Image 1 (tube, one colour):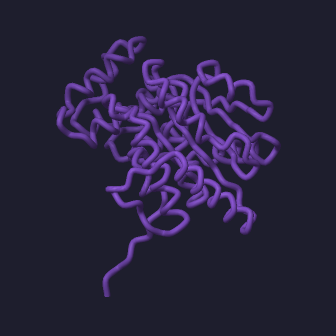
Image 2 (cartoon, helix red, strand yellow):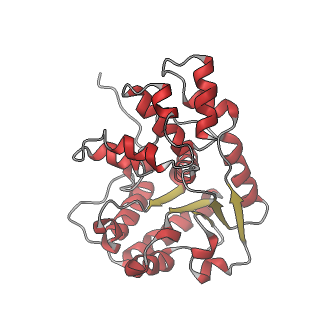
Length: 275
């Protein structure tokens, strides 16, 4: 008998990120966001310094909500990543999968009217089941002004006025569109770095001594992004002392060393490094 594999909407999303391995469960942060939504917040914005893990946290939140969440992760490696037509197809594809259990035909070019109708169907279904719905967008605050059409498209489809929805965003609140910034129901969550235990778990399996783990944890200073780069360098054969010889106040050197080891035609590696 052939084995069946359960497919979730995050598997259907065209932009869902490749999560780091190991992916450190930050359950306490997810619970805090849930509490914000349950205590009156309809829009929550996750803020924090670069490489602190905002994208990964939003991906974990999306995965935790199953088919009650629609997600967009704006992480283009070319201008094609800012194509509103692609975003519209992705939205309709996710909604069609949630509502009808099938993927949208690749030859279909859905309109904004199609997207609105699917969203209203999604809301009607949620009302019947008394389910809260989530709309998750990562990277909206970082869309360049030259691609303002993408920002405008997202604003037009964001269900800001629909009570059934909760909206989770990331980035600098001051760089978000005014319509979002001025919302009375907006709350912010400042994401902190790895705890000592999370840092240790992120470096497991690299053949390190306790002393090396301690030294590298101090070097990473709680940054999930730096920690993941350190882990990849270790697994590629770099020694602890070689990594620690880098100027600790110039973290870009660490990423430059890693990028030099990546084959430029390896799409999966490139996507991981852009998280």
